[in-house]
Length: 251
Image (cartoon, rainbow, N blue to C red; front, side):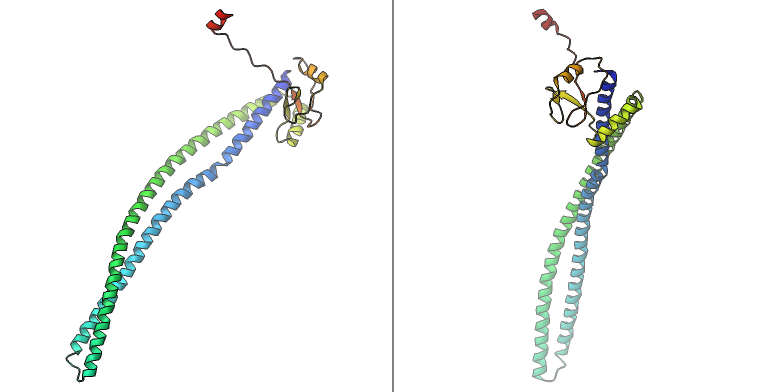
């Protein structure tokens, strides 16, 4: 593979990596919003529990006022018993007193229910506070992690873009234009490796004489896939690793 083709392969790797990094960086606002939603849900749960307590206190206060008014009514009617002149009026007052006492009893039962419910609401508020504290702690940790991850990705992106610019600067402008036109049609994939004597992306076979030319390290001509028009290259073999002492002895 000649130097210019090798540079195009490297440029594509860098540009694809940069695009992937940008996509990942674009996900951070949504990821941060998800963290904030979790905290807001916990905060909303606490606010709802606190509002329920306020409402419970209002109901208890209204019941207490009703009970106090009914008791005052009973006291007033009892004092009137000594003032009535007829049995009919006396019985009517007794009926009023009995009815009021029944209402007092019902409201006292409801007041007791409200007091029991208030204890449960207090427990819910305590639990909601704990959930909010835990959510805020976790959110703070997640924000810190997101900040670290974003900073690392931004550093990598800057390094990748700098290297891509360096690679571009070493290529002729007409070759870069040719590369860009092909890349624009194929989602940034302008060069394709030949795998098993076929285009590694569209799988169309490469002609035998083209394969022979691709195998020549000093070949300066560019060859394109007859189907997808991408620039073809033959991957260079991985360098052989150094043999271990045991391998050398066995050899």
